[in-house]
Image 1 (cartoon, rainbow over the protein chains, first blue to last red):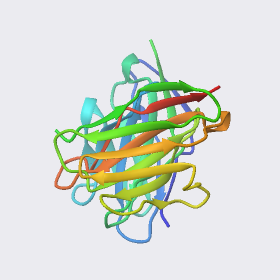
Image 2 (image 1 turned 90 degrees about the vertical axis):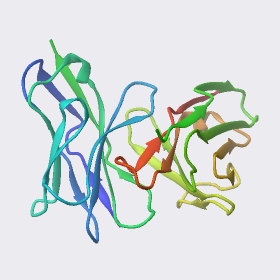
Image 3 (image 1 turned 120 degrees about the vertical axis):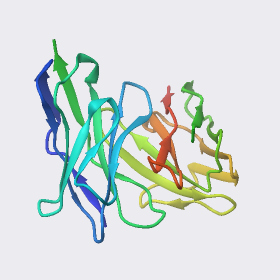
Length: 113
Length: 116
């Protein structure tokens, strides 16, 4: 069975500084990896995904993520954080097929002006 | 494209009553719908998977008689919380698989259920 670990409950970063939100995964086959952002009492907004191809994936709002197979990681990054990036971020994974996403516990990002 | 409309956004109900949550796919056919539950400051926990025209598959520990899922058409899936109790208070989110898309899945905006 697949699983996702987000080791940090909270990440604090100053506005303008780079940010990283960590994610590691476990799947039996090739991973399909996703990052989502959630604002209070809202659904999930898609940021980016990795299926195959380049290990560096670029997504919405300036976010990117790097797939590292040897470390089974898919960390989310942004070169320069904005206060408006403050939200709850979820990493998710699935294996092949029409299967549901399995989510990490989420990381709350706080960007301080 | 590929929008799922979820209603209501929030609902308050009395203990013992039932509440229905609807998810409609507006511009695509949702053959598969996933229902998640999210507790405060916690992750999304999959409750069940529903396929159009067949019975839902529930995850271990989810009471199928309490959380009734219906997926009678390709554009509508419903979750009914029967005989609701305060411990059922939570945030419920539906998600549909979107084939041939850049993002793979789309999510409803969620329903905040409060049982008093």
